[in-house]
Amino acid sequence: MNEPPGARMRVGLTALTMAEYFRDVNEQDVLLFIDNIFRFVQAGSEVSALLGRMPSAVGYQPTLSTEMGTLQERITSTKEGSITSIQAVYVPADDLTDPAPATTFAHLDATTVLSRGLAAKGIYPAVDPLDSTSTMLQPRIVGEEHYETAQRVKETLQRYKELQDIIAILGLDELSEDDRLTVARARKIERFLSQPFFVAEVFTGSPGKYVGLAETIRGFKLILYGELDGLPEQAFYLVGNIDEATAKATTLGTSISNK
Image 1 (cartoon, rainbow, N blue to C red):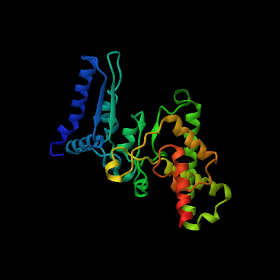
Image 2: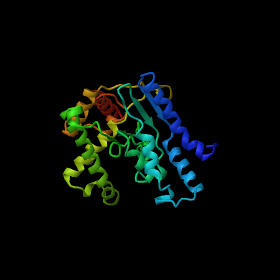
Image 3: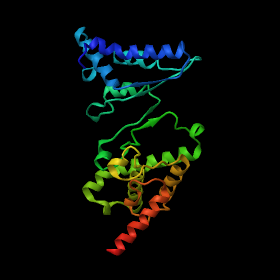
């Protein structure tokens, strides 16, 4: 940030040129990290202001889409090799409709959105499954079972989100039986989406967990189909596969009985 805006705007394109060299000349597959793509947008906005251009929505440069396309569309594959990019995207005021992140998202194959609300609940990784997207989530790519389970999880979480205002004002008792069941399952899903990190073992004292795709799908299907409605939602927090949640529920039940 201590460099002139023109230099900051060009540095991303310079890195991309280097990546293209490794791809086209050395015929290598390149992984390009950009942290943070918002700095590219910010530098472009400053350059635009210095040139006296009339700003567009929210004060961004009128050439935002063109500039973003100039960078993002060069990140592609050729017969010599490929460039794959992982980019950090700052979202001003957590507004995903802000022109800067919205223009960036339009070029990305997948987005992982981190939520302050989930982090405040202590749910890590704090990934919001409703705002996160992937073009790969299609039946012909991931399979029917994976796709249908993912869609049902999102539908359940979306319904829970819609009901939160009613719950805050009137309470759970005013909901229909079906909605109360949806809320209970959504809260279990929300906690089951948490996972102990290997990198956090030193800080939490809990061993990291790795869960395979098939086990993950099985766990969510059991929750969605009501097979685990009798388990407390605390049992799903920071566990590995669904069997660990069942075992944790038994332990919690034993602890309560002893008290």
